[in-house]
Amino acid sequence: MIDLHSHIIPEIDDGSRSISETMQLLKEAEEAGFDKVISTSHYIQNQFEFDEVSRTQFLEIIKNGAKDLGINVELYLGSEIYVTYEMAELVKQHKASTINNSKYVLFELPMKNEIPNFKNILYVLLGNGYLPIIAHPERYEYVKEDPNWLMQYLEIGVMFQANYGSIIGLYGKQAQKTVKKLLKNNMIHFLGSDVHRQETIYKRMPEILEELRKTIDEKTLKRLSTTNPGLVLENKPIYTEMPKRIKNSFWD
Image 1 (cartoon, one colour):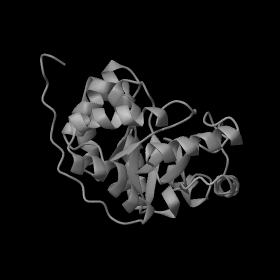
Image 2 (image 1 turned 90 degrees about the vertical axis):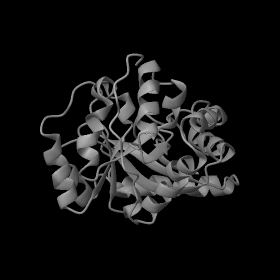
Image 3 (image 1 turned 30 degrees about the vertical axis):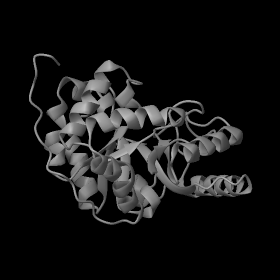
């Protein structure tokens, strides 16, 4: 499996707190079945602003440390950008990063309120040749209220990454219900750990995979956990299943 979303570089965002914690995270990732991990440290203007050169240097140190410890996990650079109207420029200026120097850009949205004129931001990204991947939509309040919110963006080529932990309720019952709906209706294209701490998400992967197999079939699970993230790393196009509008249920 390939982990598309992680916070393993120490002391540059709210993720890993030390190089020793990073090494433990990578051990846990390997034990959980990941052979590739993409480092997507937060890039948030005026808060977390380590540029691409700095993060590349940090990642090389981590790679060497992991090799010395016999950890067989390949590491790649990316960012999780907090949405801003300047995203395309941040990437062009090598402040924030695409995933593995590809055209794919991972970013997150506000948790509670929709961002005004969001489609304009997406059109700027797409117009500059970037392909948007929105992180963990199941955690956003406006998506929990209306999962079909994704449809308007799926129609213009946006892709979505769900967190593994959501399927077992690590972000609450409503996020758990929402991610199941999104998965069942072909609205999710990638799965990622969004790991920040040791002894958390990677340790629970057996339980998570068991629950995922109750929601989607094995072919879909492989596509979201391995095939599609691999295509991102190779900067290749991704075939997406036709999304289905979610019908409201009395029992939701």
